[in-house]
Image 1 (cartoon, rainbow, N blue to C red):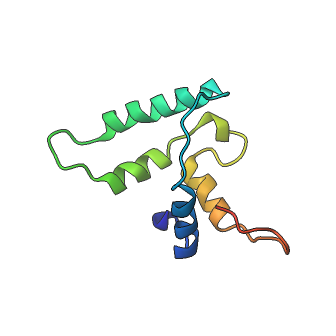
Image 2 (cartoon, rainbow, N blue to C red; image 1 turned 45 degrees about the vertical axis):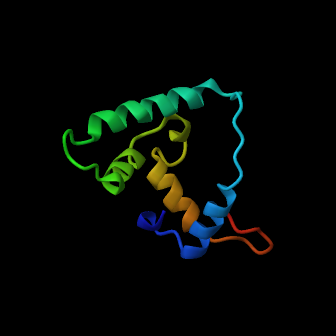
Length: 96
């Protein structure tokens, strides 16, 4: 998140939100397909026999075009950057 310009406050808020977890079925099967595709790409992108560079791998995966984002920002990194740098309107709760 810091790589894409998120402030310490946004990162802390996201970490707090990630403390509570629930596991259950998804109503959207395309999410499962997208996650499987990212898993396959991560396997293909990583350097075999070397200590993985997780930051580099995350950045490469984040730049991957993603069908749910085709109508807006195309890839997760662009969508996240747009979200982080969006100017909140008066009265809006902070996002992220």
